[in-house]
Image 1 (cartoon, one colour):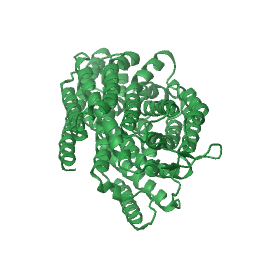
Image 2 (cartoon, rainbow, N blue to C red; image 1 turned 30 degrees about the horizontal axis):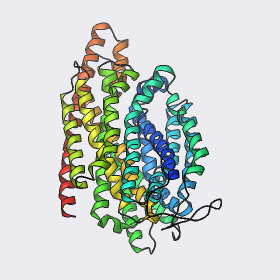
Image 3 (cartoon, one colour; image 1 turned 90 degrees about the vertical axis):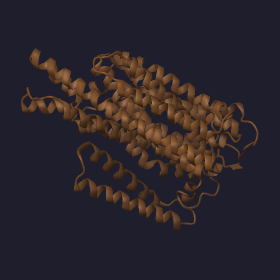
Length: 509
């Protein structure tokens, strides 16, 4: 397999044997980039109360602060993955690192909800260049299957562990600095990537990529962004004709995108990949497992802070066991598949995650953190296994020259899973919360503020007379926990069904 180098390096022919020391150093640099991008997807979970107090966003704006990063990223991943195959994955990685750093600085000093949402959207644009490039580079750097599985296990540990470590990092920063510090931490890591990346990462790209299809790129974005927006808004506020029309635009664009890919000689996305059971199973399982994990992180961080009363740092520390298990089992997944069939290992991991979600139905407003920690540990174990194996299944099922496009599909599922996990499960929690919150003792303005978010209810309770405030706080905490029970049941069912599906598909393949 020939890998075309940039002008500063000679053409490199990949050794079909073992990876070099330079490749492993390159993996370290890529792992740091993935860690930071993943941390950025969840680091705001603990900062939400601080952002609410400082910028006073509405509940919809608050969800968009979290969602827009993943929505924009998901909409651009296929385009950026294909672009990396053409112009060079390392080149795209470095461009994205610079853009990510600039967008992070803008987010750190945002003075309004709209400015913060815009900065998060720009982070999503830059992040879309980074994620498929990292996984695509790993596919070309590690040709040996066993070494590639190990390298992807490291990548998966950083991706899943970073998502889980976000609250801990955010908690420590919020204990010592203002909420904008959760963005500024990105700058030194991005600077290191720009400096050391060219030294230890070989450039790679498809030597015969064909013409870049702008129409397909536009259709892919026009498909993803309206569809995820329609899903989010319909869950949060109920279906309307306007939301239906927006969703229909996305569906129509999706149909046009699929039709175009089938007719092009060199399509942006080769739809025949979905005829491969390993590829399709990997993509679907990636989406559903991270959907569950992101939802648990979203409502779990608020449960620990606003229901049980822990500080941001304490809440982050309580999430540490689940974070650690996610990383450990991401790495162990490479060892498991040397002894058992991948389908068996993956199905087991999903079943463990389903059990963890089921444990979360035992959460109580007047209980301790033990139930949450246990449920989060089990969920982290299963998602760690799933993330490694699904990523390996996806990139291992394609040729190295097409690694960027395949990685983009996997990353689209990952980011869409985060976005939908927060949007769907977060909205389910809030719908139950609003339905069960007792605001009968409040005037219309205070009642509206209390129903916006759990943080809003806690704030209103603190300003109300003692008896009214105490009753409102108790009602808000119990209503929120009731919402987490419903979300946990949905999560457990989704994961259990996915485990059964994986077992059946992989057994037949």
